[in-house]
Length: 294
Image (cartoon, rainbow, N blue to C red; front, top):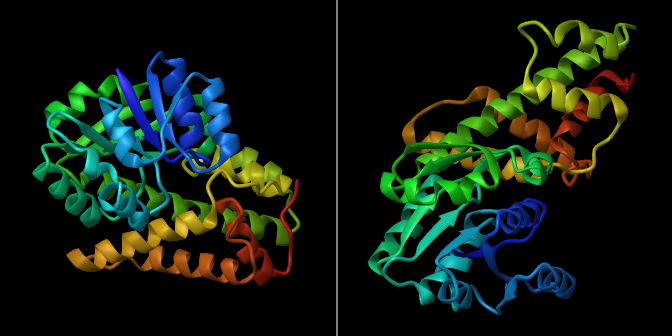
């Protein structure tokens, strides 16, 4: 099976390399000459446009920053849709607005091309490990046909419903992660300001009900002051904006999500939006005039 891959960024590069490691042939497009050379060396086929990616592949995977980029790559000039034909499939693994997934899918279907929306969770570390969580919307038979392709990049691949459902699940995920990181930040800043070692508090609570994947992944980064992006604040802000846009559409108030988005907005003003979302702790540190450390 030949797989086209569009979007060789922080997430897309390790994901695409896991496809190569799983034995799939890869067709890619990228404007960066150093990236192109890297993939030539890995044995991938290089083309110049998304249209050519589709024409040279059985299935195309996109991993792009947001809804506008997906619409441009899929529906734009020389986009995926220009090479669409009966039997081709697009698996969009970007995290975008569910309504955009449905819009793009409907236009591809007119050309005979099916689509799955299959956003991922886990950030760069899980992408490198090939243990991402993938939540998938679309036709069940298409999901089953390409399950093995997605599983080669993931620890879990779960079908959640029709097209757009994958991105609804991702929005729910991003809501929980954002609020959880804020709670971890509050707790560690409270410990530090109270004169108690945050590391010892972390070790004391991680085995109880407060324990979580987010706590184990982000508390050590906060205490070690390691804010290199695994998942940037500005990307999480994009997701939370999509969460609130969708919640307003369906009539669901989300006050905690809105509050965390405003915290991230404050961090953006301070120039921290390109750091990992664990930098949310800096919002609380500024308020309390303290810095968390081991």
